[in-house]
Structure formats: C-alpha cells, structure tokens
Length: 266
Image (spheres, rainbow, N blue to C red):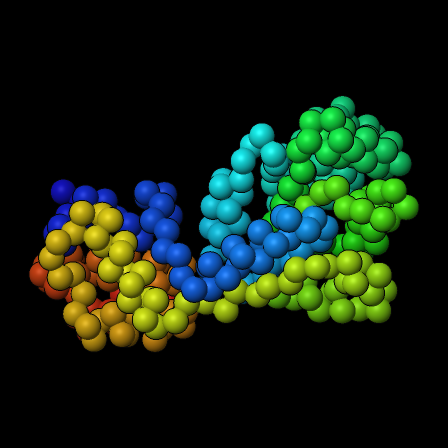
C-alpha cells in the first residue's frame, strides 16, 4: 500500500504528477483579469513571481481556456534557448519554415503573424517562460519584430513570464522604449494563510479524503513555513505524509510537520 492511503487518499494530491487541483484564489482571479485585458488590447505583458508562486500553473490554465479558433498559443521556455534558436523556434511554431539568418526569420515571423491576424482572424499568443534569462539584444529586437503598420497597431500578444528580476532589466535606460510598450505588468505575491488552509483542504477533498488528516496546529505550522508559496505547501504536506506513515501516526501533528520540514531542508 502507498503511504498516503493511511490517510484515506485515493492519490497524493501534493505531488506534481498527480491530478491537477486548481484553487482560484483572489490573486489568481486578479491575474487572469490582467491577462484577459492583455488579450483584448494586444501587445506586451509581464507576469512575475518568485519560485513556486504558481506562474506556470496560472499561465497554463489561462492558455488552455482560450478558444483555439480565435487564438494560436505558442509557448517557449527561454532558459533552454539561445537567441538564434529562439527566432528559429518562433518562426517554426507560427507555421513558417525556419531560416538560418536572423533577418530572414524576422521577415517570416512577421509574415506569419500577419497571415494569422488578417487571413485566419487568429491572434497569436506568444508566451515566453523563464523570461528572466532573456538578453538585452532580444529585448531590443522585440520592438522591431512586433512592429506592424509603422507601430500603429499590435497584432500579437507577447507575455513574458519569469522571476521578478526581469523588471530590474526592463528598468535599465537602454530598455526604456520597450518598457513603455508593456501594457500589463503583474507580480504574484503568493496566497494568504486563509487561502492556504482552503488550498490544503481542497486538495485533500479532491483526492477522496473524508477524514481529518492534519491537526489545525499542523496546518498552521506548514503555512508559516511555506510563507504563501504553493509549491512549498505541496512539498511540506507530502513530506509530512511520508513521515506520518513511517511513524504509523493516524493524524499529522505539529511535531510531525517539524520533522517533515526538516527532511525537506536536508
């Protein structure tokens, strides 16, 4: 038997590869509102948050909600791409045959965006994750790459998602022309303690649990240690289930939480 079955769970809801259980917090709803504003306006947007705050989950679920007959979603992760690879990948993802030279890829990217917008009546939604790795040369290129009809209109949505330090980069004088074109900039602060309690209880409920798994003091200890970061809440809860099962404890106590957190920090 798996360790989590001791606590009446059909699966472990705190593991990344388990069934996704989404809790729409006030911050989540606000971020989606900002993203939808960006969608309707078109242009550049920036979504930031420290590690584990839920950026990728938010963006993935928002993108999944978009009507594929109206939007073409393209997702790329900057931490794995060089500048040349980025342009080639973007051209290919838009439906063009990638070229070897940057000017040729620029032309093909713009042609495909125009084709999608004018012929297919689709808005390209280009999501660039890990955008804090983006270099200055590419940021400078963006103003040219997404310039249509002498900069009079935007035909694509370009969302840069990454760590908050991307804003430090954007605030450099050299990037002022680009920063002025950012129409949406939102930072995820993390969930509140009350939302954290709902987060844990919702995950347990969705995993088929009908018994009390965590004492109130245990949940309090987990939330204090996680400091509003969903990824840490998941990590600590999973560790506590392991420790609790090893100790044959029928309920997770604050002492078990301390042991579980200590194991995570080894």
